[in-house]
Image (cartoon, rainbow, N blue to C red):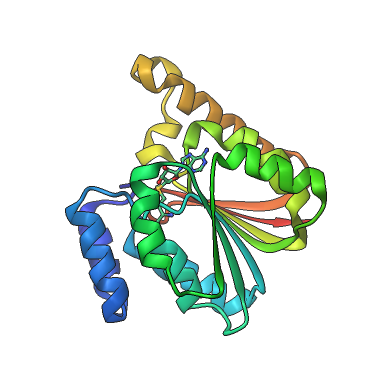
Length: 214
Ligand SMILES: C[S@@+](CC[C@H](N)C(=O)[O-])C[C@H]1O[C@@H](n2cnc3c(N)ncnc32)[C@H](O)[C@@H]1O
C-alpha cells in the first residue's frame, strides 16, 4: 500500500459497490490469497475505460479472471478482451469463471512467448493493454507490447511502485527483491524516457503507470 491505510480506507468508502458476481469473485480471491486489483485501481480502470472506450483489450496476468470480468463489465458491449495466464492453479479457476463469456479469449501459456509470437505474426493490434503479471518480467514484456499497441493506444501497468520500495536505494532492499527492484526501475525509466510513450506514474493501488503510445 502506497498511501496510508486511513486514506486508502476513506477513498475506498467513496467507491460504488461492485455488481454481485464481481463482489463474490473478489471475496473468493481475497479468501484464497489470490492477488487481484485493489478497489482504488478498479475504480481508476473503470474511469479509463469510460473515457477511452477501447475496442480491443489485451490483459497480461489473468489469475482467476476477476480483472478480466471487470474489464468486460465496464467496457463497451462490442469490446473484445484477450487475456493471458500461465499458472495451472489459476487457469483452473479462470476457465470456470470465464466460461460462456463470448467477448473474452483466454490464452494459456507464458505471456512472453505468447506476446513475442503475436508481435512476430503481426496479426494482433490492441488499443488498451493492461499489464498485471510477473513484475520482474516487465522490461521484457515491453518490446512486444510496443509492437502490439496501436499508436494512441493506452498501456496501464499495475504494481509499479512495489509497495513504495521502488523509491528506496537498492542497498536497503532485501537481497532476494533486488532483481525485481532493478527491473522495475529499468521498466519505468524506459517508459518515461524512450520518447515512445507519454507516461504518468501514480500512487494508485500498488502504484500504476499509465502510458499513451505516441
Ligand atoms: C497479480 S496476478 C493478476 C491479477 C488479475 N489481473 C486480477 O486483478 O484479477 C498476476 C498473474 O500473472 C500471472 N503471470 C505472471 N507471469 C506470467 C507470465 N509470464 N505469463 C502468464 N501469466 C503470468 C500469475 O500466474 C498471476 O496469476
